[in-house]
Length: 71
Image 1: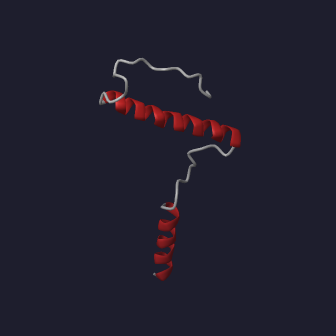
Image 2: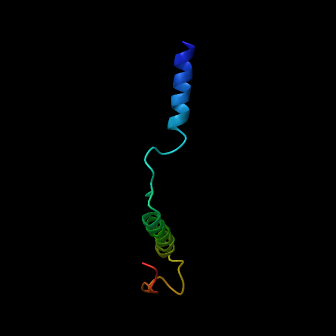
Image 3: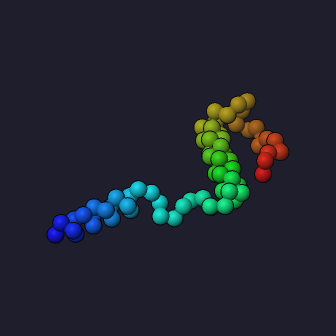
């Protein structure tokens, strides 16, 4: 009985320590590209939030500004 409890406890600890399938690639170049995409998406979320509540400056009718970014 003790062996089953220890096995269940170990299984529970192993399954809750992280994701079994990693979110990013193991290849450094591909992982860097994925991280850039992720960070850009989060920045766009902030811009969408400000635009939704009309707190972006100078006003909410300002078009998107293109800056010639990394990607």
